[in-house]
Image 1 (cartoon, helix red, strand yellow):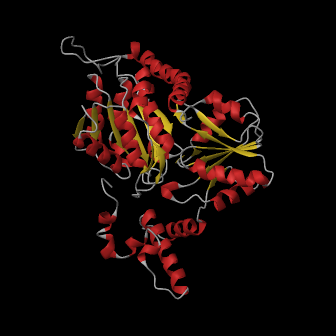
Image 2 (cartoon, helix red, strand yellow):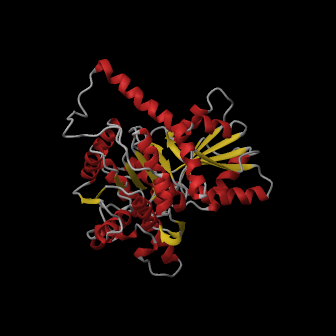
Image 3 (spheres, rainbow, N blue to C red):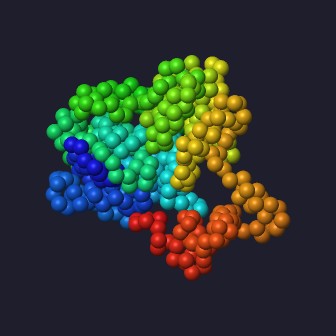
Length: 452
C-alpha cells in the first residue's frame, strides 16, 4: 500500500505487520517516533496479542527482549547512540545466547560532546557484537529490511540490527509501499524458536563455558554469520517474488560494470552519491557506487567481484576508528588482498554535517587528479583545528576542546554576520545557543524529545 509517511511511522507499520509478541521500548532521539507509533498500534488494538513493555532504560529494553525471546516470543526493540552503548552487555548476551531479536538502530553520533544528529559511530561500535547489521539506503528499504530481518534472525537464531540514518530517514516524509499484512504472513511464517525455556522441561541457558569448549562456541557464532551470507540473498529473492520489489541483499552496485572509480558507502548518503555519479557519467567519467547493505556479515566475495576491475576505490564513511582511520576501508582491503588495490578513505557527515554534491565533486576531482590524501575528512575546517592546537600550545589550562572549538565557531560566525551589517542571531548556527550562559543553562530543554 503506497502511503506518504514519515520513516519512523513506516518502520512501526512494518514491524507491526511482523506480529511481534513483545515490544520493549525506551525513547531516545531519533528513534522515539518508532516506539511511540508501536505503542499507539498496541493500545488501539491494531497490533493484537502484543505486550508493549515500558522499561526504565535501554539495558532493560534489551534484557526484556532477551527474556521474551528465550521463552519463545517474537521480540523487537529500537535504540540509538548512547542508548545502544547503555545496552551493550545485554547486546552481547543476546547474540551469545542465539536469540533472534530484531532491533532498529536509528544511527546517531556518540558523545561527548553530545550530538543528536546522524553518523554511523553507534552501530559501528558494535560491529563485533555478534549481531547481523543491515544498512538501509532509503525508507522503502528500511521498511522492507525489517520484514526480512525477522525471517533471517529466526532461520539462523541470531539477532539482527536494521540500521537507518537518524533524522535523515527516521523523520523524512516520503512515499513508501508499506508491506501488506497478507504478503507479510506469506513471507514470514509463525515463529518457531530453536530453543525455548519451558517450566515443564527446565534447562539453564547462559551457563558458564570453560576453556575446553569456549573456542568452539565462538567459532559456531562465526559460522552462523557465514551461513547468513548465503541466506540473505535467498531471503532477498523470496521477498522480491512476493512483494515485487528488490530490497535488501548483500550489496547494491550502481553503474559499476565499466567503472574505473568506485565509491563504497553505507546508508542514505548513497542517494546523493548516485546523483553525483550520474552527473559525472554525463561528462564521460567512468564512475560508480557500491552500496553495502550487509555490513555484518561482511560480503567479502561480493565486494571483491564488484571492485576487482576498478582502478581506484573511495571508501566513504560516516564513522572512523580514532587513531587509525576508516573502518569500512579495512574491510575492503581485506576483500581485495592479493590484488593491486588503491583505496582512499574519506570521512564525512560526522555529527550530522551536510554531505553536499559540491563537496563530493570537489573530493572526486582530487581523486581524479591524484591530489587527494590517503585519509581525508570531508569539509574539515582547518582554521578551527589550528586555532585549538595553538591554544593548547599557548596555555596549560586550555580547557575543553569541544567547548573551545564550538565557541570559536560561534564567534567567527557572529563576526561574519556583523560585518555584513546584520545582528548576530543564535539560530544562525545550531551551536550558537551555548554562546549565552542564560541559554546554555537550559540547552538540554531545547533538544528533541526522548533521552538526549
